[in-house]
Every structure is written in structure tokens, then in C-alpha cells.
Image (cartoon, rainbow, N blue to C red; front, side, top):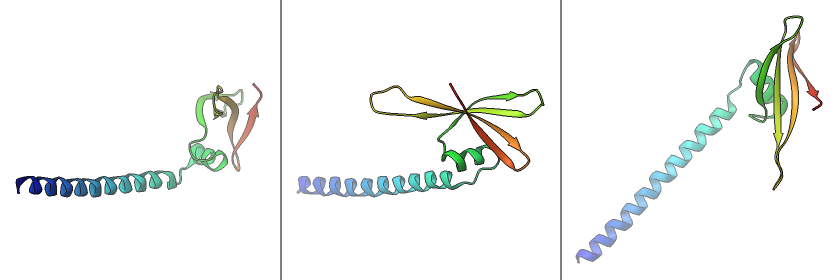
Length: 105
């Protein structure tokens, strides 16, 4: 009788644990989707709209001879069993927003 009770308690524990883990996974996925759907402003928003969310990384910020800020960003491209290739861009502010130019490496 004790063994049957023990097996039933273990099954109930596994069931409740699976419900808890499933709820935590759903909550985590909703939080991640919420982070991706946040509209970012400024340079981050422009980079998200142009290249995709989180696709490019900010490498450096420079000041040119005219005093304008130029952000140097790179976008890695991954392929199986190969080293990543990087595409470099200069992003700068204009009167109408931001623009980017690819840098030849």
C-alpha cells in the first residue's frame, strides 16, 4: 500500500513540476517577444529597422572633421564550419534621420 501511495505522489509531483516548467517557459517567451517588440529610438531604432533586431553591433563612435558623430557598426555573417565574415558600415545623422554607407574592408 505504501509503495502505491509513493508512486502516486511521484506522478503527481512530476505532473505539477511539468505544469510549472511549462508556465515558466511561456512567461520567458512572452518577455523575450516583448523585448523584441519595443520600439527603440535614435541610432538603435534605425539599426533595427535597417538591418533587423540585434543584427549589427556598434563597434566605435568617431567624430569627423565637421564635428559630426559617426558610428562604425559591423554585421557578422555566419556559415557552417567557416569563420564569420563581417560587413562594416558607417552610420551618421542627417537632417532627415540616419543614413549608412558600407565600408570596404
